[in-house]
Length: 299
Image 1 (cartoon, rainbow, N blue to C red):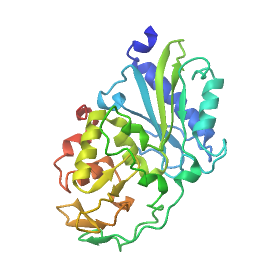
Image 2: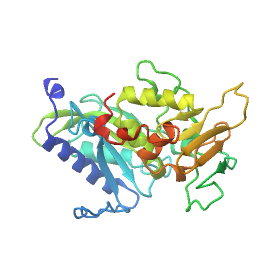
Image 3: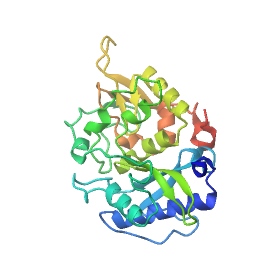
């Protein structure tokens, strides 16, 4: 118990991230495992990558636990409902066999996985009506389907109590467990697998936090007539608003405005980064631009 209260040294946090990333690459559908890029080079598009979220991003160092987000440029977290048709289950099994991640009978262990079929494409959304630069009629560059059922799960997004809303609508596969370091020390670890590549900005924003900032951003989104979730931005479906659409400013300077029908997912071509989300939540302005730096998100 005392070990779990200790701040995790940087060397151990880096060891955890490296081990999780290596196991993810072996568990992946493609099995790709490229060497690390040279300084200044971008990460490859064929492998899974691991990065720190949570306090590792907002404080620039790990706290009493280590939060790791796994993501891929092209591959989803699952491609079927079988045990071998996802990234998380084989990854956890390998880490447990290596005696790095403790099993349920040894220590706290909680795994949450959304069935692949529950993340399937829903009915094709109606075309968004747009004005200004970047209208919906332009080429989307081969986008993945914007409308998937899990992206319209907003059952808890109006809640701001107890923090339960932070996970209730989150369908990224994840595991909360205890890690045994190479030196035999025990640490808390959370591993989250981004469900689909296009959802990465939302997963980063949600799992970086802080929890209070997430709540504030969701409330700001509600004021704009949208829901901000860990997977997408979706138009709200409220009675008595006097309009069947939500008019959303993407970029005020460029004049980019989108009209979304109730429960329609904002096309991902408008959201390539956390900065894009923050601009939309700020009404298409740069009012929240300072929050692009994760160190400034400890609200």
